[in-house]
Amino acid sequence: MRCPFCAHEDSQVKDSRPTEDNTSIRRRRQCSSCGARFTTFERVQLREVTIVKSGDRREAFDRSKLEQSVSLACRKRDVSQEQIDQLVSGIQRQVETAGESEVASSRIGEMVMDGLRQLDSVAYIRFASVYRDFSEARDFQEFASSVQEVAEGDSDSGGMGNG
Image (cartoon, rainbow, N blue to C red):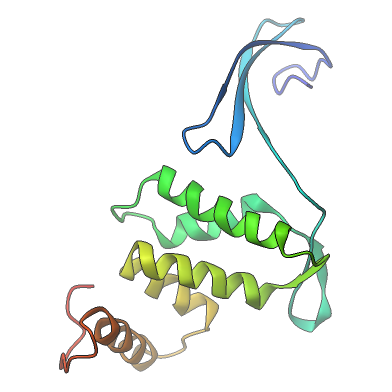
């Protein structure tokens, strides 16, 4: 493993342990050249998956981009990093075990929406605003009203409420 400090090619593993959600291995390493310590994470990748984006553009599935999107939606919300990791790991597992080498980005967006709906209604609305390209305040209001109705068992709420 290349040292992120001096770019030396050799490092020693000092400690290995599974992460809290058991989806990866956390390895504490020390560079044999400069002595700096750093952490790496090792995850199982079941298959290479290509994401088909709008305009038929294609790119490799990138877990970090998915995690960044979910984290941004959950910013300043009562959602732990562990909950975000579990959601992202679950989506990654679904994508890799679906048996398809290509997955539409819209399908991943829907998986994120489903996960955030269960996790935090404000994060769900935030993600939806970007994913569904809200352009006016009315778009937020209509979407938030539909979220509140579902949360309250389809009762007549008359407003947006707290979340």
